[in-house]
Structure formats: structure tokens, C-alpha cells
Image (cartoon, rainbow, N blue to C red; front, side):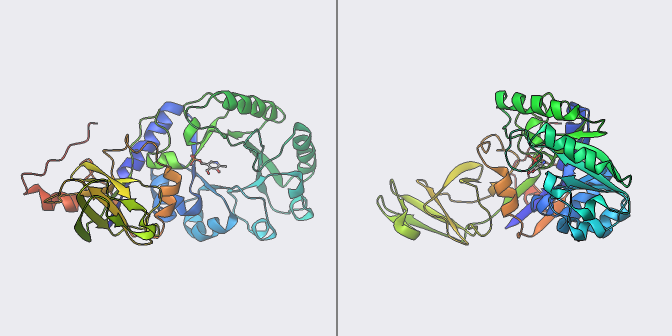
Length: 362
Ligand SMILES: Cc1ncc(COP(=O)(O)O)c(C=O)c1O
């Protein structure tokens, strides 16, 4: 199993996002950068002039704290402040206020400077200040302490790339909240809304950094995952395979077993064997999955589970699920020029005339 994360693709995604949106970018690297390894990604972000890091929890920030503080990056924590986080002092640490219940004595009497972003719920119906009245009450309380700087306001959209009507409703509601106070940083657009109209002046992007989640955008998928066949055998029409006999061979053919189960990756339904699509069949096991082919595959030259070249076919995939499911898989971080094939494999196969690889088109 070889998982490659192409850092040059991530760089291209960042450049593309900045180019089309013309806004500052906050990088959402919660859950260890969606499982891809936050420390590696932080260095790259700094390199690409992204100075805002967003974590879901203060605990996540603590894991990267030394690096973040050394690189002098701004940090926004999405969860509400806690005693522990309020007692920390890092001059670039920004806290979220998500409801009037967050206005504890500890917060209101804080005696070092802190930055606040107010999260408003405009229709996601998950977390955030729900009414203009609640927002005003919170602001009135916060400004009584001059250590508290109200820096920003944000919301999160519920819509996917294609949806627009509900998005417009949320954006309209957000605009009403934004007008209440002279907020400096206004952020709402995540990957699916990068190309949509918004009052915000800063993006808050996670998945899009890796080249997934917005088909309307030029994206450079960063992940390639290769595997191998660990067993193969002939089956007759009607033979059953795996748990619960969940797959019945529709004709005579061949079963190929790959060493990737739901413990390794979720959310996939096919692989590419010699660039031919083979469906995953039957019930997946913890460490294995089954492929069926009516024809015998004599020589397996490549077996791609995730690759850059068939991204269009994988549009239906839920990339949030896929990326986070890879969190325990060892990762190879590379920066390469050939499309889809890591250089180590490329060297090995370059002698083989049968193997042809494409150059990137850009
Ligand atoms: C509040 C908030 N902002 C931004 C993001 C980033 O979203 P995306 O990965 O779709 O860019 C998330 C992701 O879960 C989120 O919860």
C-alpha cells in the first residue's frame, strides 16, 4: 500500500483559490489536517503565504503550538473558549464566541489581550449565535473589557457547490449580522462556496486545499493510493464471495482480493486495474476488499485506488470521509512533475516500454 500526498498539487490549489477568489485564505486544518498530517501542511501553508490556521478545538492547537508560535501564524479556534484556553497567552490566538452562554466571568474579566470572532448561525443550524438581538447583547458585554478585541464574524454554509437558493438566504442573513459592528475579518466561504458571491473578505477553506470538493474550480487532487492483489481465483456464475455471501458472481470470472478494508479506507467503490475500472463487490472486510472481473487480467501493471487521472469518475465520492479515513495510513509526501505516478515507481517502470505516462497538461 503506498499513499502519496503531492505537495506541489496542494501549492497549486492554494494559488488557484487565491487567484479566483482574490481574498485572504484561512486554512482549516482541523482533525490533523483532515488526517493528512497538520505539521507537514502547516509548513507548506506558511511557504504559500497563508498566515491563518483554523482548528476545531484548542486541544488540536496545543499539538501544533510550538510550530505555530514559531512561525507566528494566526490561529482561530472554532469551539467556545474554556478555562484552559483562556489562560493560555499567544498574541495571535483568536477565540470563537458561539452563543451568549460563552460569556463567562472568566472571559469577560480576562486580563490579557484576546481576539474574538463571533460565529453566527445563518441556516446550517449547528452552532452559532442565532439572532441579531443575541449578537448585540454579546457585543455590548464584550466591549466592556478593553482587553477583548472583537476582530471578526463568520458563518458556515450548508449548501453544496450546485445549490444556490438556500445559499442566498444564508448570505442575506449573514449580511445583516455583518452590518452590526465594524468587523475587520469577515469569513464564510468554504470549499463549496469559493466561487459564490459573498460579503466576506476572507475564505475559510479545508478540503479544497487538497484538490477536492469543488468541481467548478480548477483543482489538483493531491492524493494517490496504490495497492496490490493479495489473492485471485476463478469463480463460476452463482458463486458467492465474502461475509453474508453478499456478492454472487453474475457470470464466470475472477475474484481479485486487495489488502484494503474499512479499517484502511472508506468511501471508495472501485479501483483502476491497468487503468480499467473494476468495481469493489460484496461486503468489505476490516482488512480486505473484493474485485470482480469477467475477464482474466494477465499482468497487473498498476492498481490505483486513488489517482489524479480519474477524478471525474470519482466525483460522487465523499472526500471528507475518504481523507479522514486515511489518518492511520503511512504517508509519503512528495513534490513531483509527472502526472499520477510517483517518481520511485516512475523510475522502475520507465524501462518498461509498455508503460506510458502522461505529463501534466499545465
Ligand atoms: C466552520 C467550518 N469552516 C470551514 C470548514 C472547511 O470546510 P471545507 O473543508 O469544506 O472547505 C469547516 C469544515 O468542516 C467548518 O466546519
